[in-house]
Image (cartoon, rainbow, N blue to C red; front, side, top):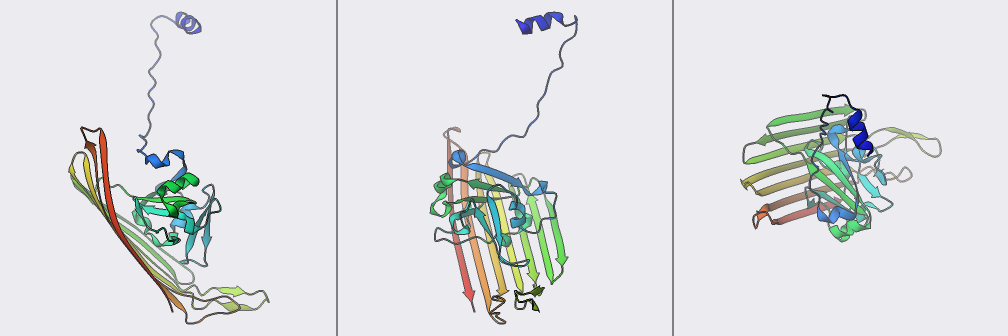
Length: 288
């Protein structure tokens, strides 16, 4: 009745202007995510100069980034009190840690290849496997529609140097990207110990190279074949504690991941989706 009365009181010949609402289409989510509390962080929307993925995650509800020292040192995620050994880390659906309890160093992935990070909290994350008891951290690479290149160089005190470079290409049937991150630091900062004695941190240098390449091929309108290769070379000094410093101990880490996947959303005239994926991962750690 109220709506009819308002319509009768409107002057003749006047009509309401149409209202058009614009919005972005939400991407389809993994069915396993239905019961999770998920936060998505687009890197391009962060106004700060980003130096690491750990920096991007600071401030996310429930997330604590534990740093092992100065710039270049390990950054391990803690999620709602769960340690990094209980958090599964994925890169475009490919696991970067195994169920044996490895913690992922967030500073090792190349920034230039990452488009956004998804953080899933809650016990339902166990649907991703025994390594996800505390939650899931999912890195999504850039989706390129045309060719391009980008990069960033950063430098600072104590020998800090960071380089993030990326390259992308695209055709009607394929698209891909490659990125590399080079980082080094002397870490020779001054400090004062608990007795008030000043000193310089020695044997604290870091040198790291992380790389990633991804190629996507569309053999048909409904099918996609994706290949991904990720690698890490990391070597660093191990300075020890202030009370018991070490001037010669070093550690070295190598990581390699190769993945190949096939996805078709048109099985049975679009009624079914087929998703097949295989990957090989290797990681070595040496302390001398």
